[in-house]
Amino acid sequence: MLKMAVLLSGSGRTLDNFHERIQAGTLQAEIQVVISNVGNALGLTKAEKYGYPAFHGSDNEAINKIIADYSVDIVCLAGYLKLYEPPPNLRKGVINIHPALIPSFCGEGFYGHHVHEAVLAKGCTVSGCTVHFANEQYDDGPIILQKCVALGYDEDVDSVASKVFDIECEAFPEAINLVNEKGIEFFWERVAS
Image (cartoon, rainbow, N blue to C red; front, side, top):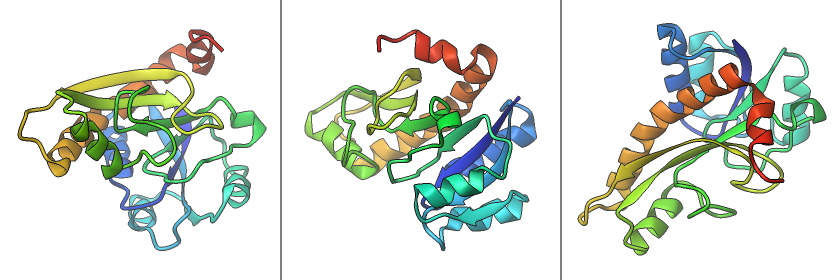
């Protein structure tokens, strides 16, 4: 079972999903600590309500200092909106979810509604999400899992966002379970460097 730190910047919807699935026994992980770069993030309040240690860390140095006090196998970026630089021992253990099918609609500036606007502007008939290991570049690193959703011709940004978030709620826990099963190195070794 993987021990994880959860980094977030906002409402903690992904934290809700993780917590519910851990309680149900369908996510093979334990949340050790929740950290936000935003001091008043709703996600921190939720973490405290769930009984997880919850902290504000304004930058990478502060976050890594907090993580050092916990036994952590992976760091999950759950709506964390900054580029995270982990300590050396977790360099390959940072997992992110992106609301599009990488390598499309990704990179710096592509987050949240910006992604869905770009998808609609191209007239895409599918979108989805990608769970991947993170590295020092936005939306780069080995892909763990992707899931796809069909888009109708009458979609708007909110309807695409809703469909993609629904599939994210399945994909992120499924990807963590895959990492628990196969190990971190499996995913780094299966891609060209």
